Image 1 (cartoon, helix red, strand yellow):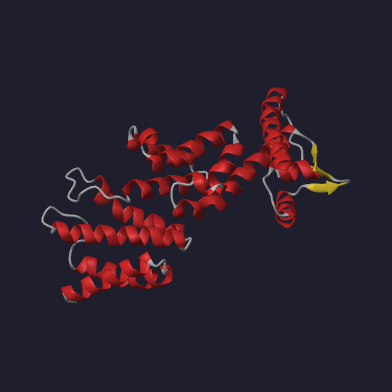
Image 2 (cartoon, one colour; image 1 turned 90 degrees about the horizontal axis):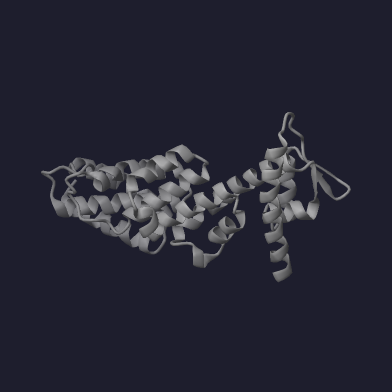
Length: 263
């Protein structure tokens, strides 16, 4: 296919992405990737034309960002793998991309939302000191730190307050991450208490919808009786573990009460 067709399709893709027409982007990307392969620029090589390599990288970045907006994390991972040679090549055949750190941070956030902590830290180790200096990378790093601390109120604020989110794409993973957080809180609650008042449990798990809360209870196998939620009990639980988890729960409940007072 002629070069003119490649340039025309690239411009059409950029235009569709700028207007947030992600479905059109999804239609344009597969034939464009075929063209990248035919032009031998899908993978950066020393013999490749620099201008064409930058265009190829930009197309793949649009593909990665489009897949996020379409909530296709499998496709997102595929694009990240295809972008890796452009970002990690020792020869640095292309100049630094403005989207590189954002996409890396989004990859970290996806791993965190899936609770793939080992993979999260493996990727983080390749970033040297950027966890403290880059605002995109710092975002998932701080979320992971707060999750490990049990500071769920900070996670909630960082994922639901627009001013705390570094870019629009990060909000896409918010629902997945919040669901992961709720399951962590639920597991802690089951270990710390035999039951909780329904209103406390609802606030503890950051539910704004009673229907969603009741669906969550059903999925966990909890029992509601006399305005209390009863948890299944585990055997051989140590007192030390119960006290430690109880402190986390009390801190989160305190935050929930403060929210209720403010509202």
